[in-house]
View 1 (tube, rainbow, N blue to C red):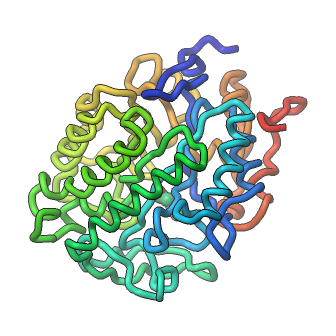
View 2 (cartoon, rainbow, N blue to C red):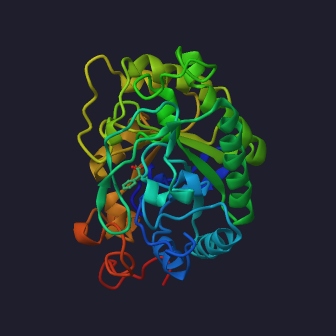
View 3 (cartoon, rainbow, N blue to C red):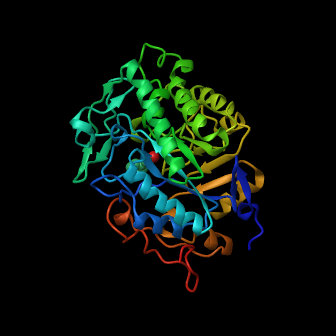
Length: 368
Ligand code: 8OZ
């Protein structure tokens, strides 16, 4: 075993990790079309990747309204809980820990994906002009309607129910998806949140929705089994803010109060360059958080080893490399080449490009 700290055990709140390599949340669009549930295929996929110290599932909608793409899984129905139980059992049997990423897409949706074909919801009626996939083609997101103040408590209740469902499904904790231009991020940023009530205006108000969601989820799980993902300097899904440093300083200070399992940051552009825009200071944001820091975005082995060694982060989440390398941790430890990713099989489909990437010759994949 390599003796770098990256491969040593750690704790993320109450969750014991055998190493500091995390499988990042990765949308793969292979849930069952009829009920957005996962099944044996996903159990096999995640268990194959149980070399990770922690697995974060693909983003999973907390309600039918929270859905924005075809074939993403949910965590609001009994069938979905039953399906996720197969996944958590398989991952635990293969020796890792797994948390589910709780997701509401807000305005990043299309009427064809919404209950009764209605408009997606958002803090304000401002369209993202982003793209989504409706099951047949890529389409522009539909213009949203602004949430009524009285509807917001209902969405918080949906997060609570999803958190409770996650417990029943056997997860080790949950990650709140507050990144990448989805609903919580839409509330945080002043471009997408023009509300004039208690949820909009100054940043103290724009963080209120995040706080209410966190309060509900922490009440279910205890703070030490809850993580949060932010992407302060990403404009993915056409999100923007006039002063992300100020907005996210406020958000991180709020999150720091809970004593969470971890804070997970997308460093730079989601899935793109790691550059931080002028006026942005990622380290200053990390420094506002006293707990476990998880970094993500385009890390390679050397960067990850160094980041953990120097303490700039405690855990490193790998995304795409985990898709094509089920035995990623083994390969990183041995410092051997990685399999290439096949972009054609990223979203949707079956076992091809999902559970058929090979481990190193002669090495078993974790689950086999
Ligand atoms: C890629 C495709 C669809 C959704 C995210 C959940 O960006 C996603 C996502 C990624 O956080």
